[in-house]
Length: 104
Image (cartoon, rainbow, N blue to C red):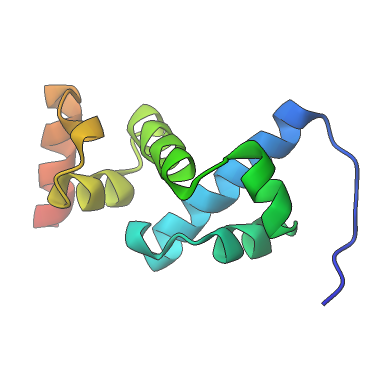
């Protein structure tokens, strides 16, 4: 499949890729984030994903930071359950929201 190229400012493109990664994490699960799935969701190439997020660890850290900042409960809950160090210092109010989300 040929990808249409469009030139965006680097900050805009990075945000598009990050938003695509968050979308993938919400739809398929945090552990299902791959360079390919993010590139497809962002309608860009894997190389461009790598350009803005050098490693998958960098990309996943950005997803977690974004999920915490935006209070995206499904992602935060998954990351807490994985014992991710990034969630060790989240606010108690967010922890309570996650618990309520899990309990349904």
